[in-house]
Length: 228
Image 1: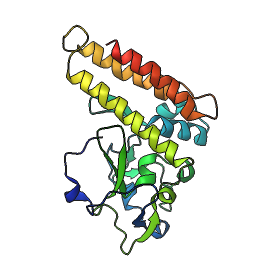
Image 2 (image 1 turned 120 degrees about the vertical axis):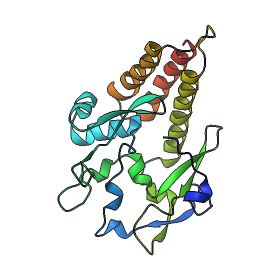
Image 3 (image 1 turned 120 degrees about the horizontal axis):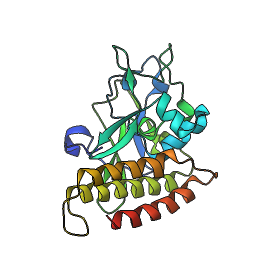
């Protein structure tokens, strides 16, 4: 999800890599769940998030979407997100004690917080610290790779960069012209969202090598995109 702000407005002015120390440690969010409320539709899921949630909850991707998630347009493309519920707009996965009931397989955006990603336009990105988001004071320093708590973090970062770049290329396609030099029709735009949902979210990943399966689907997706 694109944000029309500058880093100086929302960060400490630094960019971080996986092995850098960043002041993000929040004592396990003790007595606090502010970041799990009032987030609107901003907790957008990528395909790995969907895969983890489906396995963690014992659901098919389609069942997960039907029972637990929402679909919303994100920069022109329909994608799933975690919904907020009730008058206090709490994440539906918070339990009565205000703790995350899906913590072991929580989405990437939740793992990052209060970090964000700054994409450099070449397929890569670095992390930055959002200084106005977390309500916890006196946060401690922690290594970025430990904070995001994801197996094979370098491979994960490469996957995120590829996924982001692919979505951006489709968004540019939607805003530009097709192979015939014509603007894409509404029907073609809908076809983009349907393709993304079916190919990357709703079709289960069958092996333990998620990244390998994703790479094959991405190659097919790029060929499909180039034919629009």
